[in-house]
Image (tube, rainbow, N blue to C red):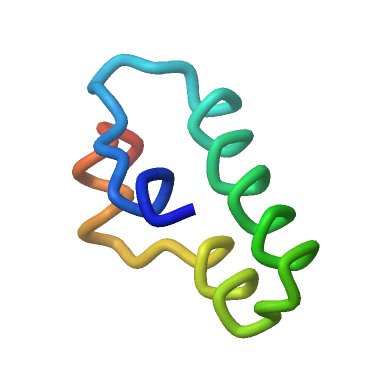
Length: 55
């Protein structure tokens, strides 16, 4: 999960694929018993969204 948290999504990736990555990470944290990290991986701030080319 550490590697997945540090992923840098390339510009131009479809928004749905980007969302799937973060939802999959949230799901993994949930299954591992880390509810706070699961919620954190579902909430992106504006700088992260801009970095992904989604703003």
